[in-house]
Image 1 (cartoon, rainbow, N blue to C red):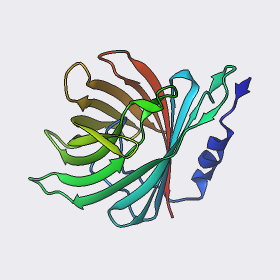
Image 2: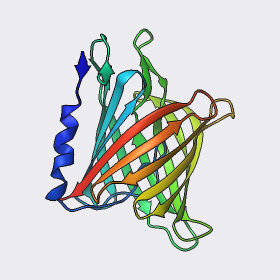
Image 3: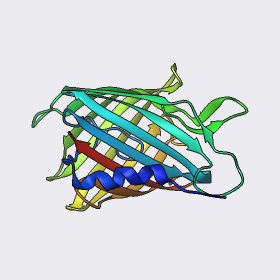
Image 4: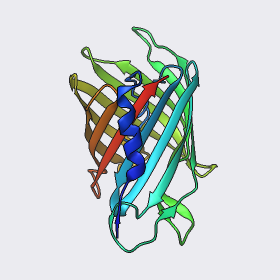
Length: 231
């Protein structure tokens, strides 16, 4: 049976009535140190392997602080006979501690316990969540090239596991196209992941990501749909 993602369509139809903002809090799998302006709502849906879909909803109720959740649905995309499964929601928190300067980077601390690839037999995610993280963002080399980097302690739910690092670069090739390159989950070369993708800004409110995760191991193509507005 074909399963249609009808709940995404209302988000897209709102673009003509709301104010836009373009702050990149997350790239593909790695966070930046940026937080959206107050009263900004963002919805990001990611379609991944085996018909999975995870949607993140975030809101900025106060200056420098955002809060949100993630909901994962399994076997909802495409044509298959698997039952749709809804996984427990995740928690997303982020606080920008420092705005940065010409010398020092912007700094933020955050928490994200959204894992990927849930193993129902073992009752856990095969790819642990980013967990508690510290991220930094600054412009390097030339105008518009943004370097993001940081450290995180992965989590399985709310249980803390191991210390990792991450880094990324993103650059606006044109006003409508952003290039993203990430090196994530850095603890050893074998377990780290290299991701790359393009973010296409369809409008002021709406963006599409075409990305490939885990290039250095078992590559996976993903499609990400991002929509945001400010009240």
